[in-house]
Image (cartoon, rainbow, N blue to C red; front, top):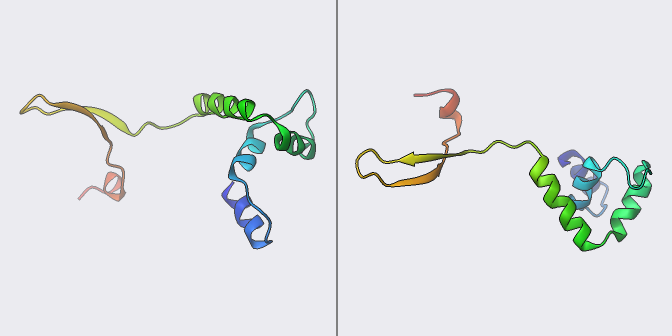
Length: 93
């Protein structure tokens, strides 16, 4: 997606991250597999359908959760915290 956006910007074409993302995961619409036809459909697709499609995609796409439940051993306070994930994760000091 980033490569596609960069190419469009270099050529002075309008970019649409949402449209490009949908084109990357929609294989066919009513049996039509032509990317040009799918692009036309996405241009006229009702907003509610687009919202539902993005919601389902978000639920099904693999993702890494970078949160962990933490309980303080001294005061018993607990909360969900972000897992520290930087260069020190790979090369501890």
